[in-house]
Length: 429
Image (cartoon, rainbow, N blue to C red; front, side, top):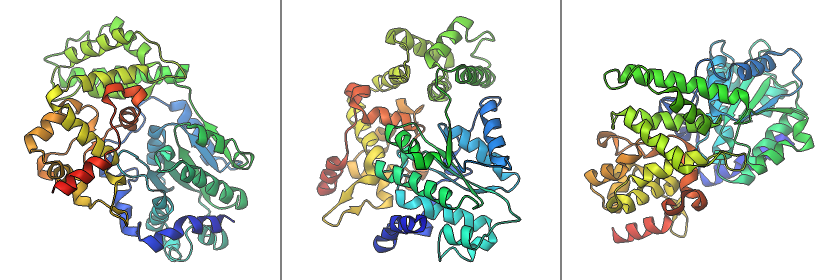
């Protein structure tokens, strides 16, 4: 059954040629240079969680073959752990903002990585992707268990595809419990994903590890991360930052605003240590004033209240004369890879998706491009002009992309779908 479902999922690839093995290079594994620096767990954080996952993976009597976790950093850290004893089978890090969200690429990417690591598997790769080599042929190395890590499932394009992949993997784990493949899936707990994991058939082969963002464990980890990060800032800006910075009062205000939300702490530190502004003390003062003005407390229903306030502050600092250009560039970064042109639905050419390509498309000069994006450097990875002909504008965190696409969260900074803008620009050209 799993084989039939798998072939049904991937068969359109061969008809439409949308995805080939060469496309693997656009998908990122745990050590890809495109993910530098990768979102690994900060030292001395998530220690208990990682210990539980390690004990589960190494258990001789493994009852569940699938683990669902909520943090990309946990998957990155565990991937690095599996590399040392040569136990990593594959790792796929999905990213919607960075255009790595095509559901057709999942299993081909996994198969590609397995083929590069297991010599026997390479001999069967073109016959069947998963079932035949690992179940019928019982391939592997001395009975080793292979970990397959799938990060950011919620970033995958299409909610139906997200649920289908969970069910595919679950069916495989239930039908072939002795297969030497153990799956770890990281995802934000979107309702459709949570409901799929709650299905009785899926639960037979899966257990979940989630740390509530306001839990003691989460808050302690954020506290450690912030203390260590501020120490690094002090070292890098030692002539501008006093030894007693930040004050205990300011630090407590910051941790209270974070309320255990790691993504907020990470964005805060990117904002404070932004090398283009070179004044972390003033940046922290602005940040604290944003917290005071928001006058809100994160809740389970709205955990991003302070994160949204920070994003709003960043975008508010963009001169009004540049905002429309910034909005166009952000809209293209969000949706450019999804835009279809013409009656046959052709995708935009790869060189058009680059920062220099979009500047030509919109008729924006180099100096205006960088002036329009300058205030967003703590949220965006902006390629230099010398490499802008081959690199795209990308997001450090999916949370910023989510903010821009949600009018309720972003208000006047909402960025709508960019298709009409792109088509009109192409017609003008």
